[in-house]
View 1 (cartoon, helix red, strand yellow):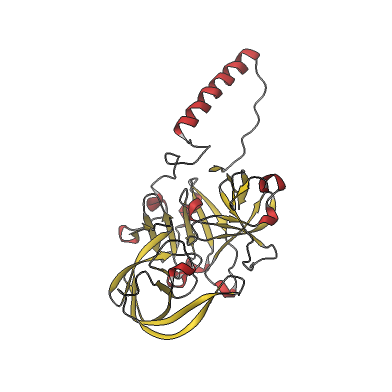
View 2: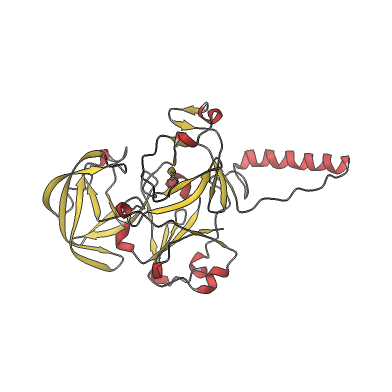
Amino acid sequence: MFHYSFWKRAERPSDSPRASSLRQLVAAIVFVFLLAAGCNHHGLVGCNHFYPKADWKTNLQYDDGEVKPLYISPTGCPDIEVRLNDKPFHLGFDFGCSKGFQITTAVEEQANYTVLEETNTYHADGTIRGKVSRIKVDSLEVFGDRYEDQEGTLADWRIFSSLPYEGLIGLEYFAGCRFTLDYRRQKLGLTRRPLPDIARESNDCLFIDLLDPPDYHRHGVYVLGQVNSVECVIHIDTGCSVTMVDPAVVTPAQRARVDGGTCSAELPVNLGGFAFAISGFRVDQIRHPSPHRYPVRMGIGSDLLKHLVITVDRTENKNLLIIHK
């Protein structure tokens, strides 16, 4: 469940009893309608919810050739086509993968690669997650850009996921770009051209400064925000299928509604001025080191991002998150 708003509504003056009763009747009818429909512009976000307009291509001035297919994996995370030694694979467009690429045992027989050595893969806090093989491919091609002699890893998909997936590609391949993810329309805008100044004047977008990513995750996406009115860092991770919240910012009343690790209570969030509330989030300790004096207390996953259209702009040394209304 996901409620959102870009503003706070002003309180209205009290009216006559008759007008008040009429408003209550109308409100009741609307409430019943929303229960039946499952959503509306300012309420629940569901299969028929208000979704950002499709003209982000025009607003951000992407050329036709800069709008690419975006594939949604069985886990709900976004994939793009990447060619390894001229063979196509759907690799995760993963904000949590900063460097290199990964293929998994789900496609190891289809891929051509050279094994270099066995090594460890790590959790964000530096603890060992499992064993992987470091590999090399002669070429990696993504959206027409070709890279020779690229190193990556081969991993058992079970280390990272409950469902098979083909692999991941790091954001280092898109350094200096701006890119727009539109889950529902399965489109990805990608360009190295800077954002036109006129786009900053649009009322259709909310511009949020991102935090400078840390050295260990040079291309990660971090925002300063609030969870339950507590100042913290929020990590945006397209490669995570479930939004996670640290128990340190979960109230006792919310903890009482945690079942199997998932909380059904409503949680207010403010993401750089974009205010919303969610439920159905995962409660678990977040060990992700922070790039700021405030700790990381929330990881926004694709289960929430699929309700939004977002752009990350890193052209000309910018570091912006753009949320489309």
